[in-house]
Amino acid sequence: MDAKVEKYKEIALRILSPIKLIDDKTKADKNFIFSAKRCPTINRLPDYYLVYFLFADLLKYKDLGKFEKIAWSFPIEYNGKAFLIEYRKFGIGIFVNEIEKDQVEANEIVNKIIRAVKAVKLYYNYVAGEGVKKSEINVNNFNFDLLERFNYLKDS
Image 1 (spheres, one colour):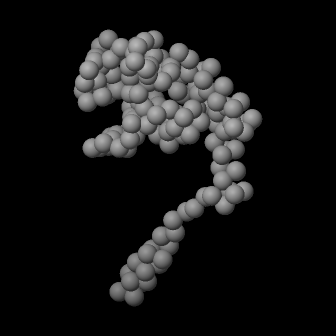
Image 2: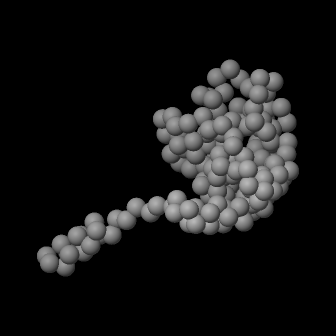
């Protein structure tokens, strides 16, 4: 792994600690993944794509994948308990077992994510720069469709 990337990873892990990947010792209700409730922290989280790049790209956390109305989902452990960071139909959120019991810890997780995203901002620039150098960035061009619409309206 590139030394710069490793540096950013260490910074993010230090800030996020004690957030870690879940394991078989993590406390969670048997149906937690299906019954988790959104904690009211949605407005404070960074943009969903920055959180995704932090956990998926930089830290290599396991994404549980797409489900109905869920684009991505990262199960995490915080202080021995399971939480989910998910991007759903109505936006990004922290999902918990019991809102009343888990609210304080969910807010602590959000604060850590905010700090980690800010701290590794240069990582995002680095990845974008490397992608440009290697011609790995593609942009869909929808201008032709827009031009056709413009011409139709202009000619009408």
